[in-house]
Image 1 (cartoon, rainbow, N blue to C red):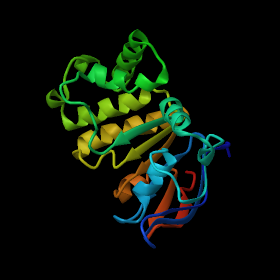
Image 2 (cartoon, rainbow, N blue to C red):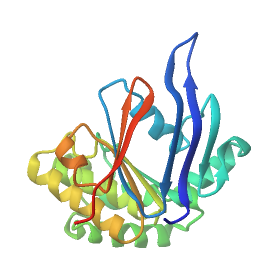
Image 3 (cartoon, rainbow, N blue to C red):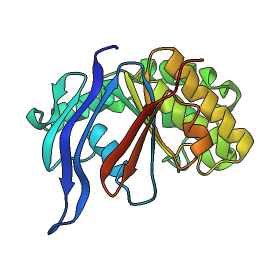
Image 4 (spheres, rainbow, N blue to C red):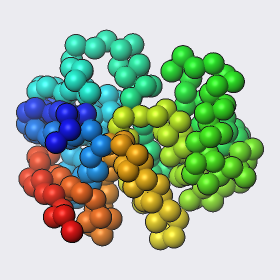
Length: 228
């Protein structure tokens, strides 16, 4: 197996009192792996994704991303890690209203140190890669749900991430648009990006190489699909 891009060792996330969102979760995700994280609402899936994505910090345990121990990084280091190695895709797109698809994607590169011209060039290339070359100047209100999600994927793709984290990326889409998004995620995986997706859709999860099942803040199952 390839070296880990994600390593969680006995990771817990504790809130006020004895409220735990995660309890001693250990998980290794290899470079280029395709993983679905499944489980009921409140099981800790999103908390785990936020910790992996450096948007939240663990209360205890060890978190490493691409060999870097997050507890040893300051806020600037974490921002640089997100900017250069991690891409995010969310269910509700998180696009800026009144801003073109091109600039929504380009703005996702603001913290990479890339100049404006190169940001826009990379944004245009990413949008063309997801089939939106004809929508560069369209604002979010002019895009369909599937096009908004493809724009969000292009924003992540433009970073050329080693790790892509997606939280219910098909949850707000119809079946046709959702399938288009799934194919884009599978394509990123084939290009070598590790893709980690939270989903309630068991049919979608069954198409992934690996399923990690969460319940009550704990990892209760970790299964791999048998090779055909």
